[in-house]
Length: 191
Image (cartoon, rainbow, N blue to C red; front, side):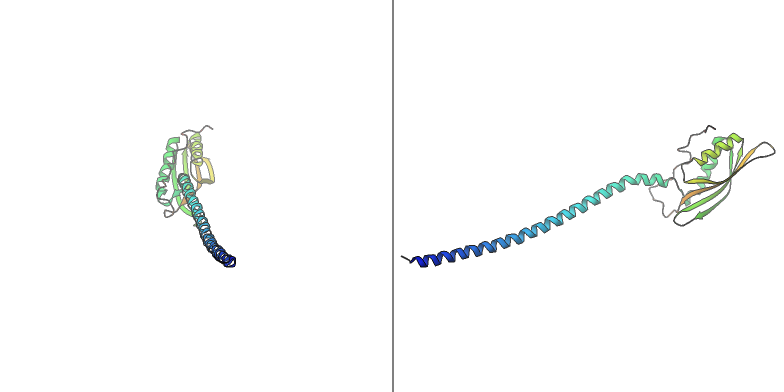
């Protein structure tokens, strides 16, 4: 039989080996847990980024229609002739005749504008309705100057200067179409 001292030494050695094994095993598990925590943090960050990207895409898709609507309030550089034709048609709708005297560009490169000098002829009622329908057209425009007079032949004429918001052709989105000048305005105004 072995002495109790040798059994104690063997038991202590076995305890030391078990504790050492436990320490090595614990440190390995702790290192793996830290790696897993880092991976989870990375996954959470990437998931959050993906969610933000998806939300941003959804928001951009939602405002694309709004952008098209806003772009419709500006006359593109390539659409000046169509805009003038729409103005003349608007005058005919109201019973007046519109003559475009001049067209020029002004403003800054960040906010370009078109300056149109118009002459409107007809009865007083026709001239005023035409001016009102132009002023309330769905465009970024303002009447800068306006003078109304009556000819010797009792024909009224109004000379007005319009400032119309414009957009360079390069900045105009390909999906954006110009809105017709007659699309939103009623055909007659009550004065």
